[in-house]
Length: 445
Image 1 (cartoon, rainbow, N blue to C red):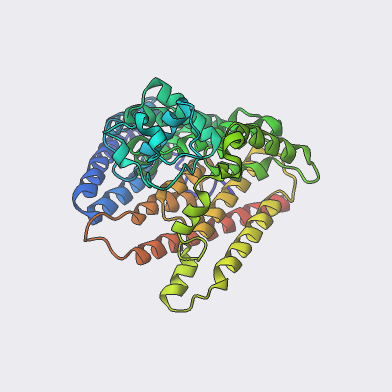
Image 2: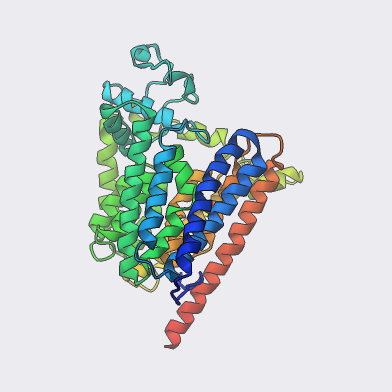
C-alpha cells in the first residue's frame, strides 16, 4: 500500500498555525462532547467522535503546513493533556480493565486464572468490594487472555491494583508505540507531523486512556518490532516481539507474515517454541484449559453459528441463513487470509514499506472478514493511516464508534454495523487500487 492515498500538503504557511490552534481547541471540545454523549445522547456521541476524527486529519494537514516549530509539540501537548484528563475517569465503554486487574491479582497470589473463575470461593480473599461486582462473567468464565497478558496484568497489580494504575500502564505502552511510529515515519521518509492523526484521533484516546484496553501492548509490540526489532533485516528478533504481543492479544500475529520468507522454517519454529514456553507455566496446572474462555466466548458472540459475523447476520435477518454457512464462511475466510499473507510476500521485497504494507493489508482484510462488534479491535490497524496514508484504518477506527449504543436515540444496530463495514470495504478497495497503481508505476519505471 502506498503513502500517496491521503492528501499531502506541501506549501507551508504562517496562517496554518492559528488555525491549528483552533482545531486543537475543537478536539478538546469534541472529547468533552463525546463524554456528554455517552451520558445523554447516542447521536451526540457519534457526532462528536466523527467530528474529532475529521479534526485529527485536519490537524495533521495543518501541522504539515505550519511554519511554527512548535506545531507538532503543541499537538503532542494536547494529546497528552487529553489522555491525562481521561486517566482518572471511570471506564464507560468497556469493563475489561476490571478483569485485567482481577487476573493480575490472581496470578500474583499464585493461583491459575485458567482454572479458577472469579466467583471461586478459593479466591474470596482477593475480592475488592469496589471492583469485584464490575467483573464481567465472574460467575462462570475463567480468563480469556493469553499468558503474556496475564504476566503484564500481574506486573501492574504488584505496583497497584487500581484502575488508574492499569490504565496508566496501557498509556505508557501506547507511548512506546507512538515513539515507534515516529521512528518508522522517519525511515519511510514521511513527515513526523503525521503523528497528529493518531495522537488526536478519538479511538486510541478513549479505548486506551479512557478504558485501558490491552491493545496498547499489541501496538507497542507490532510497531516496536518494525521500528527497533530489526524488522525484515533481523526477522527473529522482530518475530519474538510480535509473538509476545500475540500472547497479549492474537491480533499482533498479523505482523508475522511480513517477516517470513518462503521455505525458511526456522522462524515459524522459533515462534511456536516461544509461544509454548510462555504457556508452559500455566499448562502445567491447567492442561488444555489454557485456551481459557475462548471457545465459550466464540459461542457467546455467535461466531460458531455465524450470528456474530455481518454477512451471515444479514442473511439471517433475511431468513436465508443455513446451518452449514458458518463453517463455510470460516473456511473461506481462513483460506483468503492465508492466500493474502502469501501473496503479500510473493515478490520477496524485504523493504520496510513492503512489510508494513503487507501487514496493513492483512490487518484490514482480517477485520473486514471478522466484522468485530467491539471497536477496540480496530486499534491494531490505526497507525497505518499515518504511516502509509491508508483510508481503511481511518474508516474502521472512526466508524467503530457506531458499534456503541447507550440510549434510545441510536439507530438499529444491524444498520449501524452494516454502514461501518460497507464504508470500510469501500475504503479498503480504494487502498488496494492505489497500491496496485503504485506497483504498476514501479514496474514501469
